Image (cartoon, rainbow, N blue to C red; front, top):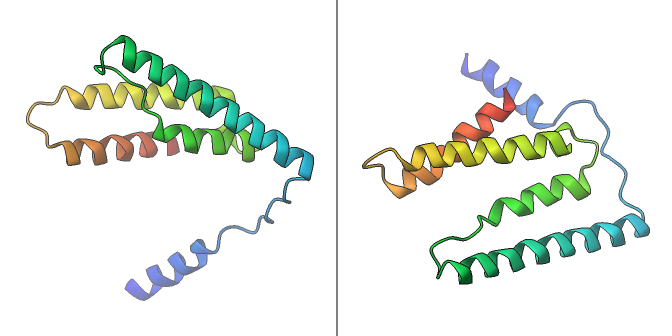
Length: 125
């Protein structure tokens, strides 16, 4: 059984029969750079404003933004990068994280691990 599973895993780890997407042209690369930079500057600025306004009580969760902008600007044909999926996935992630934050006596390391595990699994279904 283990050998069969290992062979299946090895084959699957090489991906499907799809070809690697072609690289961006120079023009596409420049627009991608500008789009990502402007997006991150706007959200970083909003984060600074929110943090100052609330005396550090609130801030934006910026790390997932890197993954989202990768999808939005570099993988435009991927289903996960479509605006509807990007918006609903953020809402789902926020709701899940909020729900988990109300579970009493949960260690922060478990909370931080459980939230993405639930969200990613839910989005994959």
